[in-house]
Each structure stands twice: as structure tokens, then as C-alpha cells.
Image (cartoon, rainbow, N blue to C red; front, side, top):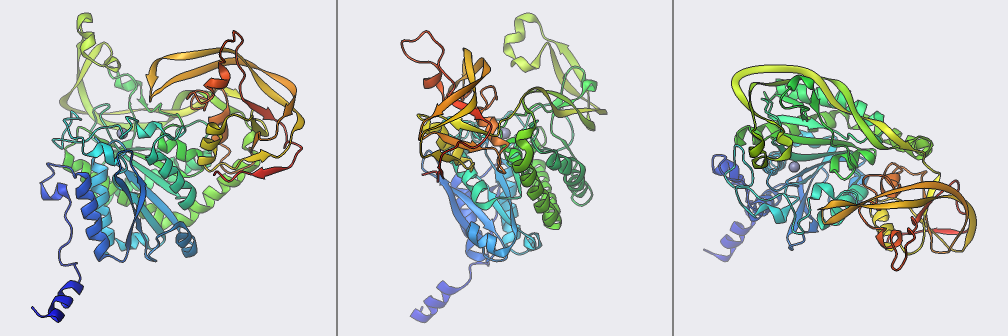
Length: 541
Ligand SMILES: [Zn+2]
């Protein structure tokens, strides 16, 4: 070959061969390994002007976690996105690396958009995809799921033995820290988090829900349940042929008529957390007992249906979220904040399911089953049966606390302040001492959980409020509730919030002191106005 011939060969576009996913190449027997995903993404990126790749972060074990940016304008940064005037929509898969069909569906989506076949999805929006969020868990293959394939899959935890979907308030993993940085920088209008569920037996391959925390803006949840979900579910059924259902499980497995329940309301879960940021979120849970091919194709079609909806309605969604931001900054602190909730009926749902056989479990055999199985072993029979039952998914405040104008974090809590700032919450540092009225929490009891959870011994506090005149020292940090992320602030700083920094143990050193029988003090005060002293916005460094 001549030198010129060689040059021509090197310059030839590589688009002749389109990439094939591991599931497609193996007849849906295997799921992709980390390197398979990376190779696949590089192959798409090389041949498509619609796809750019960026590192989201480096995992605990040193793997690059890829972020795929798809746009018509070749957007690569948040600044470039802002220049287009468009909004981003974000899909994350494989947060639990044993739940793998989302990772496969995302690769197909990236190829279909990258090839131009689904390029119309980019007309009005930029699409961000993190197809393999838990890169470290992915290749630790084992028979990690007792379901309908693939034969082997990765593990739930990341390289630090953390469940990433419990890390959204305390932010201890590089993966979730990076995703929250992405939320702050790219401000996606919607976040889809893809999982697999092995709860109750039913026939729909796709289930979905949104933020269920009682402190979310109802503007957002109303939009999801009344508009987005009905439209996306109709598209999924009529255009793509897949049934879907709001996410949940039978409240009583032995008596399905009692209701269909989702009581996962804590802010530590990604889709609840994202809702508290005044943005739309979708928890996609695909049905574990459906065969693997069905799960891949149905979840791919679900994401496609959602993206078709957001593409057609992104202006309306952006306006809704802006309204939620304005309302939150102006008035959220005037409302009571729910620290405990009861779960009530949101609406009726029809679960396409089965008649069940029930076999009582002998007392001596109970230890063979996980505690949630109860007293009766339930198995689906061949007889199909639909249950129209209440969907128990509306978290209604049971115990509330009044919110202050703002909080003051006393000096000595740098780690806690760094976490507050990492969420994107604005904080200001007092430049001098000052005197003001405040409400302090008088701690009466510090109780510890019996078991370790996510590496922590959860702390619960009992106490009462006391109005005091205080000297605030220079270096204290003021957190003003008049900001769009105000819903997150009491989640982190109220002493009895289930996901507070106190609950996760970040105030332990102040709460319990050495050589003292006296209870320590809670290092966060509630204040009714801005501290009367010059302050500087702290920039997070
Ligand atoms: Zn999961």
C-alpha cells in the first residue's frame, strides 16, 4: 500500500460497523462488563456528531464513570448548554449494579440517537446519560439476583460498600458527590433513575413513581401523576406495546385487596432528593420476574416514551420548575415541615396480577425466610387476576415542626457545612461577633440505633426548644431559607429529620462530650432574621 493509500484508509469514517450491545450479541444471556460499555461508547462517539463523552467522576476503585452528552449543538459543558437556551434531561442506570437492564437500554438509546434514527429526541432538549453509575459494582459478577436473568450480574454496593441510593443527603461516595455536582451545574429538568424490583408478583414489566417525600412541592407531583405518567404510560402501551404500573408492592402480600404501597419517602433516595430540589424525577423499577429481554426492551421503550414527552413539553416543565423555585424561596419557611408522615391513598390503581396460593410457614421454619415474608408463603398460580386497589403512596404529615427564617451553624462544624454547600445551598459566614435572639434545641436524650446502617450508627435526638439571647461568634455560618433549595435545608439541619446531619452522626462530637455527664448541645440555632453583622457568601472551597 502506498503512503497516500494508508492515509486515505486512516481517514475513512468508521461508521461501516454499528456497535452491538452485549445483550444483543448474546441473545440476552449476558450483561455488559465495564470495559464493554466503555468500548461501546467510544465506538458511538467516534462516528456521531450528536454524542460527546465526559468523565462524570472516578470511582472509589479508580474507574472512569462516563457521562454521555447528546445534543444537536455538540454541547460539552453546562455553559455550552446554557448558550443553546435548551434544558437537559438526565437518565442514570446501574446505580445498583445487579439491576442491569437500564445499563443495556441506555446503550441502545445512545446508539439510536447517535446514529440519527432517534435524533428528533434532541430537537428541544439535551439528553445526558450515565449508563454505568456504579462502575465498581458492575464486574463483581455472581448469581446476585434470583430472577429471570441474566445469568450473572454485579453487586448492589459501590467500591466503598455503600448503597449509592442511600447517599444523597450525606454525600460520602465519589459517584453521588459527582452526580450532585452535575445537578448543580447542568440543572436537568428531569432525572430518571433505573432499577429492577423483585417485590410483589404482577404482569406489568415496567413500574414507575416520583418523589414521595411529604415536603415536595405539590406542583411537581401533581404534574407527574396527572400529566407526565398518564401520557408516558399511554405511549408505552399504545406505541410500544408494554404495560406499566405505578411502583409499589401489595401492602399485605396475603391480602392483595388491602392496597398497593410505596412508603419509600426519605430524602436519602435519589428520586426523592431530586424532587426536593424542585425538579421532576422518575424512579423506574422494572419487574424482576419478567425475562431479561422483556426488561431491556420495555425499559428502553419507557425511557423513549418519557423523552418523547419531555421533548414535546420541555417549555411547560421549565416554567413549572421555575414557579416551584420562586414559591420555595418566597414562602417555604412559612409552612410546617413534616418530620414524620403517614401513607395515605393517592389514587386507585389496577395491578394486573395472579391468584395466589398461600402456605402457612411453620414457626420453626421462619428463620429460613427474610422478615418481610411474614407468616404465609405466597406463590402466584396460573390464574390471572386483576386487583383494583388503593395506591397507598401519598405521604401526609404526621408530625411537623415550624421552620425558621434561617439557621446558624456554630463554628467547629466544617464537615457539616461542606456537605450543606456541596448540595448547592448558599451559605454566608459571619465576619464578626453579634448578638441576637435565637431558638436553640436543648438536648435531653441521645439514642443510638441498634445496628449499623450504611457505615453509620444512626442517632436520634429528643429535646425541647428554648428561646435565648445568644452571642454568635465570627465564623458562624448563616443559612438563609429564602433560596430555591430551601426544602433541602431542614432535611439536613432539623434535629429530628430522618436524614439530618445529626441523624447520620456528623454532630456527634458536639452532642456527646468527653468527661461530662451533661448532654452536649445541638450546634445549629434557628433564627428569625439575618444576623446583624457583615457576612460573606462562602464559596465552598
Ligand atoms: Zn435498585
